[in-house]
Amino acid sequence: MYIFFVALSFLTFAQEEKKFLYHFEFNYKGAFLMPHSGAVKSLMNGTFPIYEIGAEFPNLGNDKFHNNFPLNSWGVMFNFSPLTKNENLGFGFGILPYLNINLLKNKESNWTFRLASGIGYIEKPFNNITNPKNMVIGSYINNITDFAFQYKKRITQGLVTKLGVGLQHFSNGAFIRPNLGINLPYLSVCLKAQKKDNKTQVKKPKVTEENNAFFLSSFYGTKTLTFSPADRYDVFQISGGYSLGFTRGDFIHIQTDIIFDKSLPYLKEYNYEFKSFDNVILGIFSSYEKKFGQIGTLIGLGVYLHSPYEALVGSYRSFANKGGFLYNRIGIKYYITEKICAQVSVRTHLDAADNAEFGIAYKLK
Image (cartoon, rainbow, N blue to C red; front, top):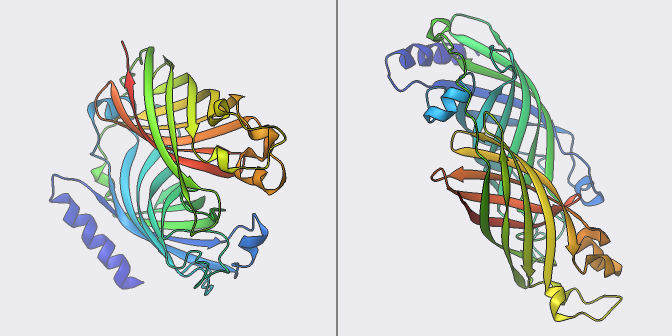
């Protein structure tokens, strides 16, 4: 442990000589597997560690990000865990860019909210021949989403510690079933190399007024209905709507979704005859977006105006909204220009993902 502290101190002073400022971090998490279904319970095996190592970059970001959020910062973490050491799950690792959000608008707070999302790897996903007992996750490559509340405290002139509570989630967005998801609640302790006198005077936020605008967007997704190996079905979506802009990257979006899901004719247990128009799903969707510079995060709720879902019976209900008429969406945007952004999101039905979405949106004047 002494050697570790010496190494952190060395990194702290080494950073001072560089114009490209960064702060080295080590994060230790004590986690457990949340038993949200019977299949997950079979993989449980007590608590286990998650290790993270990475760097925080308080001097990165565009002008709009710094004007609106001078107290926020970015970072990147490499993540590794033996998970439950269950022979049917194996280990997991990933790389996660993250955003540290200061919980006070105009004053530095000891409390921050860390939001991270990246790419992860699971050693032993479901395989109907070699690993049929893992009924939880069906792919090697998955999205990792991680969020945590952290309390920071300086312990020396060159070191800061953070104590946190959070949740890490593995999912492939129903790209390959099974996709029950892996949820890992945790407590964490972090050590960050940061000299006290590095802190520059914080300027008052220069609040950005966001504009109202119409927009158009188009998305593509793909999914399976049963465990692999299984047929794959395309999902296309076009949307149009209106954005209400407020301040500091806050938006409310209202849109119409037109979804062409090629898997629908294969959900054969209906209470009525399936017609060609039932291939089209229509919905009204509203979402909240928070934009941090070129990155936007969104979450929202929609209502299906037309869908065959409520006519489904039997086991197929679990693959199509369980007979309901509500849907959710959570996603991330990257703004290529002020008018054009790329979006990665997941459309979900209550506790289950329907499909991942990859698309682009264009803001009209």
